Amino acid sequence: MFEAKSLQVSIKSIEILRGVDLKIGEGEMVGLVGRNGAGKTTTMRTLMGILPLRAGDIVFQGKSINSLSSDKRAALGIGYMPEDRRLVPQLTVEENILLPAWAMKHLDQAARLQLAYDLLPEIAAMRDRRALLLSGGQQKLVALARAIMAGTNLLLLDEPFEGVAPALSQRLSEVIGALRGQKLSVLIAQSDSNHSAKLLDRKYTIERGANVN
Image 1 (cartoon, rainbow, N blue to C red):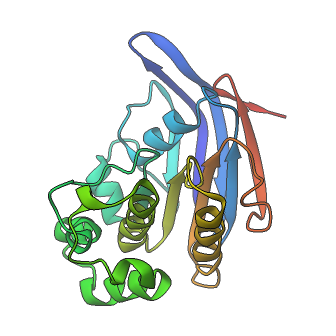
Image 2 (tube, rainbow, N blue to C red):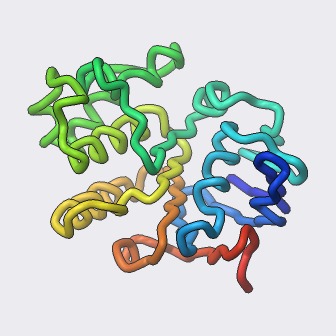
Image 3 (tube, rainbow, N blue to C red):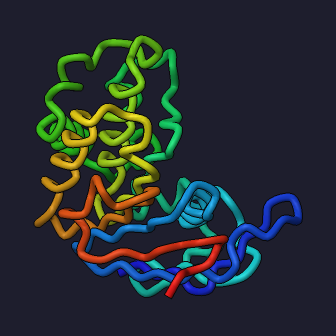
């Protein structure tokens, strides 16, 4: 369903990824595990089209998407939750969640929004609150809901459990686990698999920009 082949990426002439490979089947939950600085976030940004490839290939549903911009990848049903959340502070919670739908006219906005609220009723209660008034943990939940809005086929979740309280980590795990059975594929980047061990079908380990084993 989704495959990355020998990804090589350089930032300001510094080689960051040195041949990363991974595959995700339909409905699979896969981990990308590595220490800080191993190349996880660079991998996720490259898969989403935010960073350009120097070499390698990204294949989605049998077709190369190397030339597609990030918004066109989102239009294929790929949702992305950045490590730093990237919410628009002045917009409300609901407006932030709906951002991908404004660019993806084919989406059933009402149905996708309802799915996000069904999975995360706690953010439905704050839908009219501006993002800048949320705690860091609440922003994580909104960022996940925004990814779910766009991610009809694939979710790319970058460090969803990083920097949050144990209770919120557990809640995030519950929400991600509830996505099973929807033919939705999920890639979770994280420093360790402690929070998602029960979620993952399998995992890849990355170190110094390359696969380990």
